Length: 85
Image (cartoon, rainbow, N blue to C red):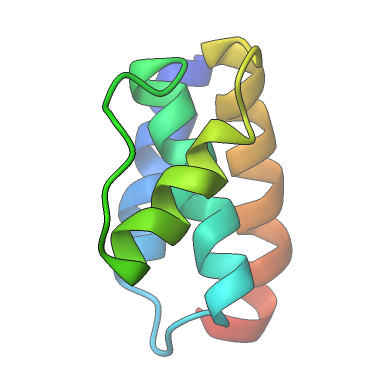
């Protein structure tokens, strides 16, 4: 299975977890997902509390290649699956 196929399969499984991860874990998954799909942050900083937290999490991944972000996302999702799937 290619990296892209595995990433797609794992990201779809995360959406079907029985319980939601803790906020910090969810932000980590979110930021890696965004970095994997879009690369470095490409929007201006929003003002809303939740949106700003997401923006800062994604900004913290700046410089990570999209393939590395996919690998990190897969690894983190597999770790968290035992708790939340």
